[in-house]
Structure formats: structure tokens, C-alpha cells
Length: 362
Image (cartoon, rainbow, N blue to C red; front, top):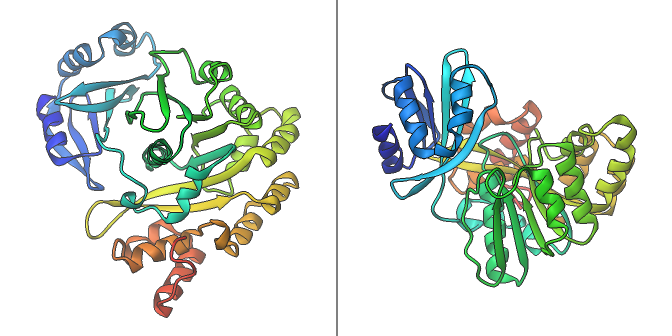
């Protein structure tokens, strides 16, 4: 385990995956490959006792199959911070590790379009960054919070599990709460936040009905709320949130969302042919027209068609963002086919052939 972690630090790996009695796997600059020899259950026992001593009871239940709840946490090793998840599979005990960055990069250095800065100028309401696990949602929100910290005077509260990026107060007061260490749950933290007088609240993961409801309520009461959610696209996010609630509450939640939702970014990390990964985004800024569409239950494609024609409002269509990356040499047309629908890919090829770009990503 020492050898694997030291190699990951030296090569700046993003993820490490360990399964008992199998070699490790590592993701470096977007490439996924085996590393090292077999890791025994004794190795895993010793490692867990070293880095997460407070979870030994839960780990013992997992190891002995008397419990099956995954274990989340974070630890420091070799001067770097890691996020860890321990879980069971048919192969036995598994460990998923994420090497956390020491540095919060600004928006432009993350290769995000200028339109993302609209999130940093928020005055009130709910702003979401959505996507799959490992799509860089937390990194993007850390950059947004960092820019607010250096440009505005606000009282910022973050609620995370675990804390991935450590913020140092500059123009803002920033306090960070870790679920499981400082408070029991996201739901409890969002209730407490209503009594702690923050202007800006980051909810690291909106994973359950109560947390989502509390985030919406905070946004309704004049707070700026940032959150992450698992969703397959910006226009699918509204239904994804509404469907969490029982049918008798869905109409009310839809009305509340139409009033407080201000922006959504969907993000995917795409492997670049020149090395590493770049974030491909789609961005929807909610104006009165989109708000009305949410209330009237318009289909996702209707909202997407509207956002495609309103780039001046800060909306970013995925094909435009892909073309922006291609134009700037970060991606090639062959890199992106698997990340696009047939219609998007056809549009993108036409844009590349014409050497013009509908907004170049925003």
C-alpha cells in the first residue's frame, strides 16, 4: 500500500482502486491501468487501521460480512490528502481512493468557459453542478467558491463528505463542516445552516429528499446555495429533483424550483489526445422563460432548444463547448464521439468544417 500511494503521489494519479487478492488499478491523466502486485486482506486491514482508526468497528463488520454499509472518510499521507471509500463486492473488500488536489485552480486554468463566472456573481438562489461520479463537480465548485472568496465579502459555509478542498479565508469568512465528523448528516447540516447566518452555502451532495428540500428552502430565504447532484444533463436535472419527492409533493416542489433555480452546469471529463482530461460542460442560466417552462412541465428537449439559441444569456450548448476545446487544441474531433449524441456529433463536425463556432463555448 505504501508503494501504491507513493507512486500515485509521484505521478499525480487521480484515482486508485484496490481489491483484496488482486493487483491495484490507477487512473493517471485519464488512462486506467494495473499497478503493483496482489494486495492481501492483511495489507488492507493494516492500512485501514492506520488511516481510519475511528472506523474500525464499522470496518470489522464489513470485513466479517455482519454489515454491508460502505465507509467514507479522508486522510493524509505523504503530505497529500486522500478521499477513501471502503465497500464490499463479490471479490471481497474494495478500496476506492481519490487523490485530492493541494491547489484550487481558477476557472480559466480548469479550461472552463468564461460563462461559468456567472456563478461567482450570484446574488441569491440555487446553483447546481451535476454529472456522474468523478466528473469534476467538486473541483468546479471549489473554483467558484475560491473566486467569491477573493472578490467579495461574504459569510460562506461549506458542508461536505469529506472536505475535498481546504479554503483559506480572504475577503470572505469561510467555515467548512465535514459530515460524519462534525455533524451527523447533510440534512441535519442544512437545517443548522438556517441558524448560522451564512450568505453562501455549499452543499457537497444533495443526495436525499430532506437535504434537497432544505437547500431549496435556504435558497427561498435569500441565501446563495451551491450544490452537486447526480444527473445526466442540465435539462434532466429538474425532473431528477422533482422525482425524488412523493407524487403529492411534486407539483409544489416544481413551483419552488421554478422560483429559486438560477443556474445548472452539467460536466463530463473527456480524455484528451494530448494528455490529461478536460471538462466538457453544458450550462443553463434560468431566466423567466425557462422558469415558465419548468412550471409548465416542458420536455427537456424544449428547454435545450431554447438554451441553444440564447448563448448571450450565459447558456452554453455542449457542441459549442466541444468546438471551443477543439479550436484551442485541447481536444480532437476523434476524442469526443463517444461523449456526444449522433445529432451533437453531426453538428460538431459541421462546425469544425466551417471553421466557425456559435459562441466558442461561451
